[in-house]
Length: 179
Ligand code: HEM
Ligand code: HEM
Image (cartoon, rainbow, N blue to C red; front, side, top):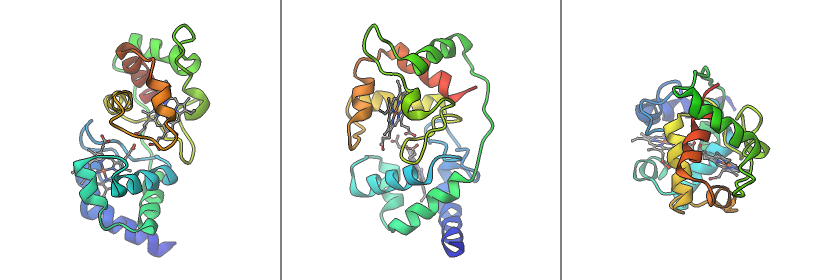
């Protein structure tokens, strides 16, 4: 396990930090924060980038030579890190997002996010943490699921976003990323 940790540190410090930051905080909203993200989820995404199930020009190059053990070691490495929750930049938008996150939109058939992503957006194993993630990144991923550009094994997120409006996506992203 110690060898795995050293290996992860070496890989992260050699390339990942350039985009995802030395502490998983990321250097731009275009790059997801990895601090506190679940190890299993990270490993699964790295494998998806490698097999081409999830497309990203930046990431496909990064993962080309990674083994499954290294993917999990990198996941564990970032999972241990944490970032403080920040205040929402747009509290009104976040307020709308709070309702949708916890209740969905029963008028249009959008499900609640809380059942999978947790009361505080903390997620679990293969359910990604959304708390402390950039709202801009979350919003982009929702749009990407909506356009079916980002695929997902069991298509669960495709069903979730199917009936969401642009405003609902922005609102829920603003809410769950902040406190
Ligand atoms: C996404 C890990 C290097 C740019 C991701 C994700 C993971 C990850 C786990 C998905 C996160 C999520 O779904 O929440 C790593 C590791 C790296 C690395 C372990 C080093 C081996 C880089 C570098 C860049 C980069 C150097 C920039 C050149 C991106 C981008 C995305 C991403 C743009 C988002 C792709 C999308 O929008 O779907 N990375 N990364 N990564 N990474 Fe990296
Ligand atoms: C992934 C948001 C509801 C299961 C994601 C991601 C986002 C998101 C932004 C990508 C995270 C990242 O790239 O780091 C939401 C929102 C929801 C919602 C805003 C409510 C409107 C649900 C529900 C379920 C679910 C109800 C379970 C039935 C998943 C799973 C993934 C995921 C399994 C990972 C997909 C993968 O492996 O690529 N969600 N989600 N989500 N969500 Fe949701």
